[in-house]
Length: 268
Image (cartoon, rainbow, N blue to C red; front, side, top):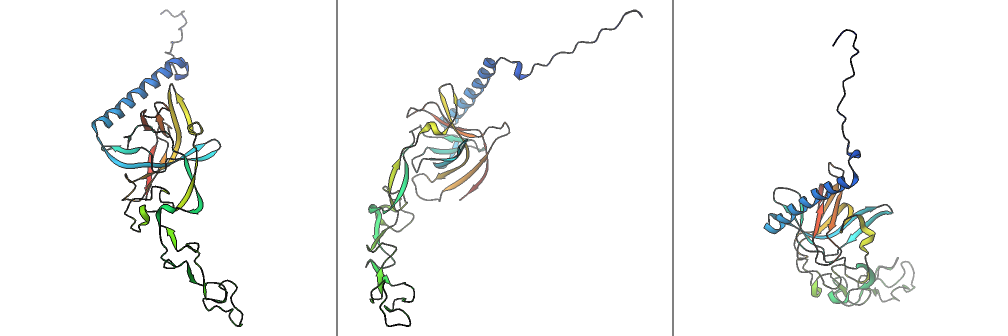
């Protein structure tokens, strides 16, 4: 270069940001990565390279309108951890959402047992103020208006029936026995409230549906007996992805996955 020539500025290679990549290419790349990951999960499930955790019972989901509970009762899919990791594996196909149960104030009649407070008589010592089972108002000769002077009143725990539910199959009292199939351990008759999958949808990826984001979920021991329920708290992973239930489709029998998120604690 001669002394009279003006040096030209050196051109710099322009970095291509992800925003400049066509949207269709980004979506295709993300979908391909997801397909690979789901294939990996299917291989783990197929080869049984996992250990069981329990049956999904409930999941707390954050929606724009507030927190909602995805309630599987005790009919949810069986979950497992991939060996040596906390990656969740779903071992069951999608069976749909069962109706949510709302307890009434009526006892479950399928697990009634003799009331252990009144001994099955339906009556117990009157607990009215200033009576205490004496039948009289303390300091006076007047009969107690609750027990009418008898010293006994209707048992409040069994509603005077002499029986109350245990929540255990057949009215048994051993908590290790299976729960009552009618009330599912609630001890009360129930009414069913349908659950709509669409109210839990966080995203749709092609034909797949993501339910979430999940911030907490509960698992029961398989079979509904043995260990008490375990509660897991969940945070977003390093990519900002929250835990979600991913359905290949809404059709019963389709595959289910749990992807994203990081488990941050477990309580019993």
